[in-house]
Length: 99
Image (cartoon, rainbow, N blue to C red; front, side):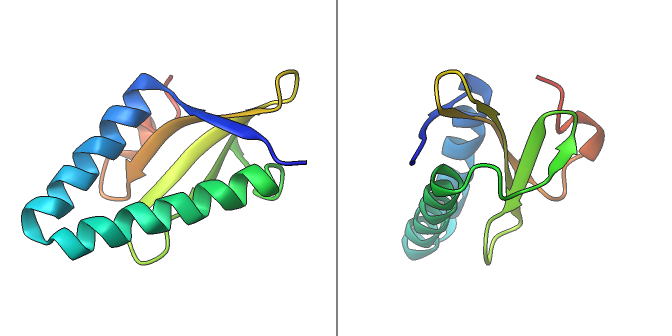
């Protein structure tokens, strides 16, 4: 069964900022970033429990070719993936799960 997904407002801002950053440098890079994030979200929605818990109930998956991870948790009651962060690998990891 495929799950639906939603972005936490902070995660959506992080995602939009990343797309804008890539777009300022290369439109093609921004397009490819969006494609790769979309692929990972589809993968998460198809198999939400595939990734192990990284911290408490948070799971995470790396975006191919880009220094980002998608941090999420699964709400089994509503069959929803809640994306809490689109996290750049250079950021301080101590803040990754503070939501």
